[in-house]
Every structure is written in structure tokens, then in C-alpha cells.
Length: 115
Length: 112
Image (cartoon, rainbow over all chains, first blue to last red; front, side):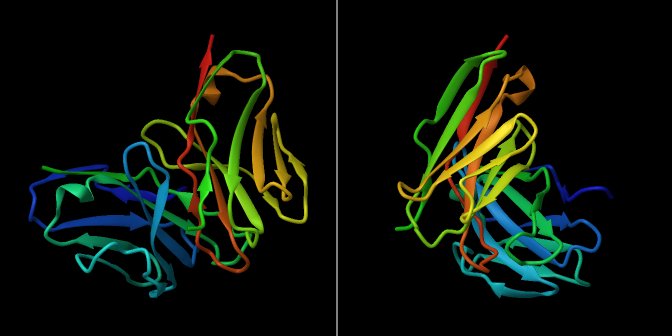
């Protein structure tokens, strides 16, 4: 596709359930990023992938959050035992590389609502 | 802690006026700054960037100004149009660090 795509666009789940959020980066982009955006807030960095490896997981808020990337392309963000405070928009971005001037292109996000 | 913040959460302007959106940063080591535009229901979209060795950079209808002395960044939009209505975020990076640190955003509303 032409841009970063994410699915689902909306996800409503019950507290305690697990969810998986998917990101399809732009073809050829080696770097992939996950961010979280709470209502009325800026973006909070979660994790960064270079290829299939994640050199920086420092932004993951708890061990309930995990992410993987396979084949240097698609990435999945998993939230286990969801809590209401996990409700937010989860944004994925990709860039050609991880260097300073590599523009990050964002997907439309997945809006997660935990009831 | 280190942060990138915004002076005003909302800005309302008349169509055709110029808009100025401000941002302050606290880390003098920041050397790359970006402005993003986020429309409702969409992801942030790159507008313009500037490196710390520059004071000013111009794009189409947009200008970014960087004042390193007071750690201040601004985005100027000329002849603001209704399509410019969105939330604008500044973000910064430090050295080779890929991680973007975002401010909270300013909601720009353009009145016809």
C-alpha cells in the first residue's frame, strides 16, 4: 500500500481481555515505531524496531505490553489483561531507517476502548 | 524531566489570517525538531522540520523558527485556510536517537 496501515481501526474490549493491534508499515521501511496517544495528549513512545529486533522497549508501560515484528514488515502490539487506563489511540509509524533525518510516516491509529 | 511543551492549547483564527503556534523545549541537547499536523481520526502528518544549526526554515505557506537561546520553536502558517484546522504537535529528537518526544498539541480552529 501507499502508506502505513493499521487494524482494526477501532477495538472495544472488556477489562481483563487480551488485544492484538496490527501495523503494516510502508514497504521497504526498516524502522517501525509504536506510540500511544491518550485523549488530549501528545504521543507517548512505546517501542522501536529496526528490522525484526527491538533495541528499545523502554516506553512499554508494563509487562502486559509486548510487541513483535516478523519478516521485517508487519508488527503486532499485544496488550494482555487490558485495563481501563489502556484506553487510547495506538499509532504506528515507519521510516526508511532509524537515523536522524528519516521521516516517520504515521498510520491512522487503532482506537482502543477498554470497558 | 525533559519535555517538549506548548504555550497554548487552543488557537482560533479567521480565514486568511496568519497563525503562529508556539512550542518550548527544555533539553538543550535537542538538535532536530519537527512539526506535525493531526486531523481528526488520522495519524500525524509531517509538516516541516528544522535542525538546530538553523534559525529558520520555510516551506509552502509554513515557516518554522527556532530560538535556541530561549529554547523556543514556532510554526507560522500564512493565509490560514479552513483545511488547516487540526491539532499541531511539535516533536524533538536528540542526536542519533530515533525517539521522538512530542508536546501535547495545539488545536487550531480556522473560522470562515
